[in-house]
Length: 123
Image (cartoon, rainbow, N blue to C red; front, side, top):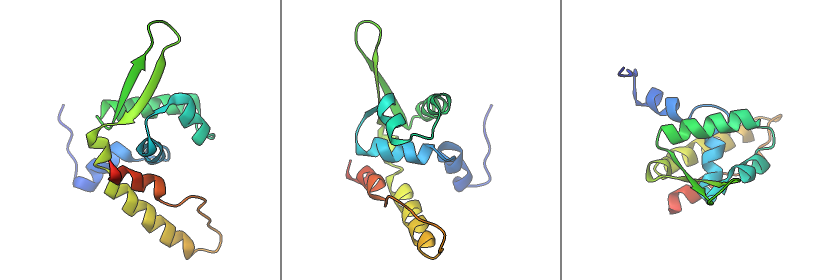
């Protein structure tokens, strides 16, 4: 069945919305990563949610999953596809906007800048 969106923003948010997907994309923008690496960088994400989010990003063509090894346990590595890297400028701009907004609020702190997202633009 064909999906219908009101505008392009809605279509984009369908792909990258949520608490974890933009953060996953940021970390994958640095380099390909294994599931254990991503869990270490995002300690508050559950294994179930991490797996679900990675599967959705893979289904949407944003990331690629590579399985290596001839027998279990297999090594699974995730990396950005060219389509995933094309989200770089969007994510950088969202991050900069959030950093600027947070600097105006006395009770908000951002512990990392948009550097991880910026690496998306280098690829």
